[in-house]
Amino acid sequence: MSKKLYIIPIFIPHKGCPHDCSFCNQKKIAGEIIDVTCRDVDRIIHHYLNLFSEQAKTIEVAFYGGSFTGLSKEKQIELLKPAFDMKKKGIIHSIRLSTRPDYIDTEILENLKEYGVSTIELGLQSTDDNILLLNNRGHTRDEIVKAAVLIKDFQFKLGLQMMVGLLGDNRQTIDKTAEDIILLKPDFVRVYPTVVIQDTYLEKLYYKGKYRPFTLGDTVEICKDLLLKFEEKDIPVIRLGLQSTEDIQQGKAIIAGPYHPAFREIVESEIYKDRIETKLKNKQLLKEAILTVYCHPKVISKIAGFKQCNKLYFINKYSLYKMIIKSCDNMETKDVKVEITVQ
Image (cartoon, rainbow, N blue to C red; front, top):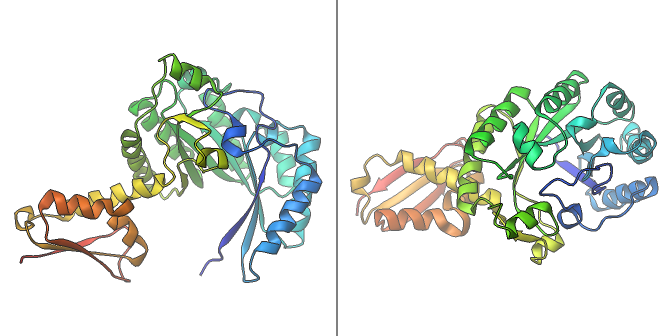
């Protein structure tokens, strides 16, 4: 069995990033902005090490927020050194950071390699040049491709981040971004629905009626297809939906848009609902019948659906007597089997 990955998060919100993208307010998204020093990095790492269990584990230090490689070289080294020293001692096992496509070049990557960085995430958000311009991203599609290829050439793990529902976005531009990401062969992706955050350009456009966020239903449908596309190409989607912060939890940050704390669960529930639906060949037999669905134990909650929504859907749609979910250890997690028992 593979070791569980333990993440030590270190937030450097908006550090190194000169752009104010249409959707971005790092203080609201990532929390209070502070200036992080090497002492802070060392303290945070030791704090988390004390929390982790003593069992065999893999530990990764992850620098989140901002654009790490937009910092001065001296500042990058200052922040990386405590993590790198612990990596050399075998106390931690990998280092990850995120940045922008236009802040990647050979010199930068050589420095990151020297200080033990294992994984680089690029926030590309879209590969459509018009959408990048509309949202004040400050880089082009060509810079995305160049940066991704260079990162792979240096043998870093590559993560790519995309957004759904940006200013100017539509189904075609979203699908094209996903196709471009697949061609770049990342090791993993993150998918974020676009929401209107307080004190952003999108908020101003929203109140002027010039930007309308996607609905939750449409975003779920789009992300369902994206998740299936990436899974088909064996590209893990390690995050689907915004991570909750205190401001988001208290309703202070988000003005409008398709935010839900259980967004991924809803998307995956829809995928399994579709899989069950395609298995129901003799629908005329379902009225007052018992529908039994067999699945791997890990996906029982996804079969039932968020707040039992899938159960209620099938019971109501087909006038079932009831729906039963049974676990089957030897099934694949993607598979479902159905059995109809006529009363």
